[in-house]
Length: 249
Image 1: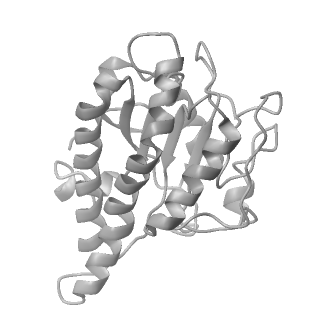
Image 2: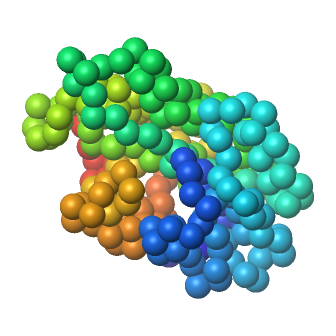
């Protein structure tokens, strides 16, 4: 996978998924020309000196030992290069209304959508710091070190009354909380040279988005890659969509 427009492609990328074995139509559609697999992976190009890391299934981002094992495996494959780009795409949805809401469902959604990504960043921080220090440049960008949290405009408080969706209390509240996590990470990690951004991928044809969604996975991903190449100090901590437009918190 190549980030177009960047001065230097990241040496390592890690994309975290909620579930899947890489064989669904959506996952197949995200394979790069170099045949990188979705899931846990390190190199972005077949010419990379680093061997591709493949797991039979994606890791459980709520299970701390699973995250720690993944960090160790990625660190082994990356050697001393560090991890340039971490994309937290793990998430579960819920259409619970006030009448149907169950407290355990609320907690489960928050565990996956908020606590999980934060735990992942915490455990992978040493690899991100390693990449940032070894980049030999100032400022922040995806070619140095970055955390991209895949969010949703359904978590926007500013857009809440203008987005015609069911209340979806667990999902919408969890994405609003995840956005705050992204802002906090951006503030804390800026001095370490690590960029943090929240991105709304659009309404995409996936198992979560359903076939009613207007965007294909390929369209969304191409847009996100273009956005990633443009990120800088000025956009760290921002909430953007797949086309680079700023979204209200």
